[in-house]
Amino acid sequence: MSIRVTFHGAAGAVTGSCFRLETSRARILVDCGLFQGSKTEKELNYRDFPFEPARIDALVLTHAHIDHSGLVPKLVKAGFSGRVHATEETADLASIMLPDSGAIQESEVARLNRRNAQRGRPAVTPIYGADDAARALAHFTAQDYGALVEIAPGIRLRFWNAGHLLGSASAEILIEDGGERLRRLGLADPRRALEQERLAQSEREIGGGREALGGDVLGVAQGPGQRLRTVHALDRATHRHQRARLGFAPPCARSARSTFSGVTGSSSMRTPTAS
Image 1 (cartoon, rainbow, N blue to C red):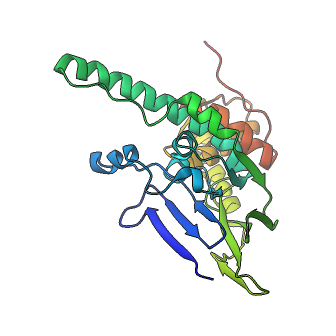
Image 2 (cartoon, rainbow, N blue to C red; image 1 turned 135 degrees about the vertical axis):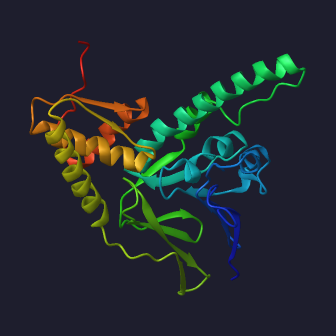
């Protein structure tokens, strides 16, 4: 049995991760990410998919970063009706990040269309909106690390902890070739210590900074993985020093913290009150 793998993103570029795996019995995608970067790269998000979304049987989502998950709402909007397989934590983070991504696109396009109207240019539409993202979330199915599950005819999936972002996974895909033989793709080393090491280091750095400042702490981070580690480490550090008050930005971190603290057993975070 032939197996065909086609890369539709993150090849010759960093973002837009998406590849399609086809057998004689099924078609699946691994990731469906947003292209980010230059204007030329961002324009790739507006093109039609180079495959028929309605013919895709399943989507494997390795983690919640937008360059891996950001076009899932567009995929569903274009006709995909299968399941999106992800870890529970990835599904939780996606429930925050995808609607947020849709809302950002709507606001950016609204601002662009105001400028276009002034210049006599045609209006554009967002890739998808917050409502599209909410509808896409209904397709998510949470899978446990280490569990072997059939996701399409002749294709089974097992997630291993990748230690990249909360809920991130390396995907082991087993493909039956019509007999007893199995073909494996993406077998990964399931070591799990990296995330805890990063968290401990963040807590040490933040705790030391709080001691020096002796007051409020504001944690600002760029990516969701860094942001969540920072926010959780701030919580743990300030929990031991009642004088410190905790704030964080941007607002997405306020929602995502519940996912992170639920997994790690963090105490409730305290936010600054108006003075």
